[in-house]
Image (cartoon, rainbow, N blue to C red; front, side):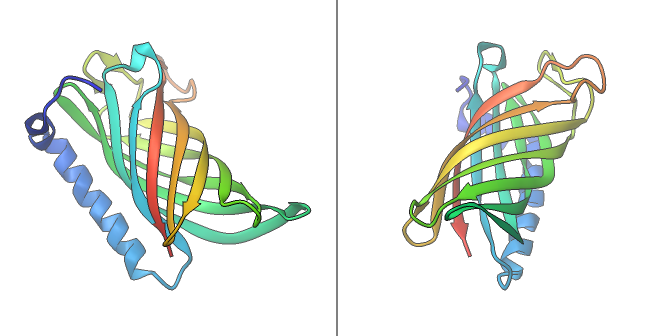
Amino acid sequence: MTGRNSSDIANAPIQGRAWWIAAWIVSAAVASTALAGEIGVRAGIPATDKDEEFEQYEFYYTHDLSWQLTVWGDLTAATYLDTAAGALLTNHESAVIVSVGPILSITTPQLPVSIAIGVSPTFISQDELGVQDFGGQFQFISHAGLFLKAPHDLRVGYRFQHMSNASTREPNPGLNLHTLTVGMMF
C-alpha cells in the first residue's frame, strides 16, 4: 500500500462521487431482494512493481442469470452479471471506476468453493492518474478468482484482475491487482 493517510482518501473529490454511485448500485440490489445475487465490497492492491502506487475500492452487485449447465457429475457452470462502482486511487489522485460484465462460475455441492472468471467493459473518469496514462477512459477488466462460501450467506474470495484498453489505443500499459472480496449472498 502507498503512504497515504485517511485524510488523503477522504479529501479526494472524485472518490466521493464514486461512493454515491456505488451506494446507488447497492441500494438497487437490496431493493431487488426477490432476485438471487450477492452484494459486497472489493479492495485491490498492486500485483506488480510497476503498479505499486494504485489501489482500487468498490461496491459490487452480482446478479444470478439463472443459466446453469451440469458439466460433469455434480460440477456445475453458472452465469452471473457483475456490476461494480468505486474508486481507483494513486497517491493524491482518484478516479471513478464503473464496470458491468458477465461471470462464469464453476461449483460443486460437495465443496463450499467456487472458481470464477469474467470480463467487464469498464469506464474510468480519468485516463491519466499520477504519471500513468491508461490510453483512454474505456477499459476492460478481465479476472479469475477463487471464492469460499462462509456461514451466514457470506462469501469471501480472492481474484486476480487485469485492466487495460485491449490495445484499442496507445498507450496500453495495463494494471494488475490482487483483489479481496467480501460479499453477502441473498
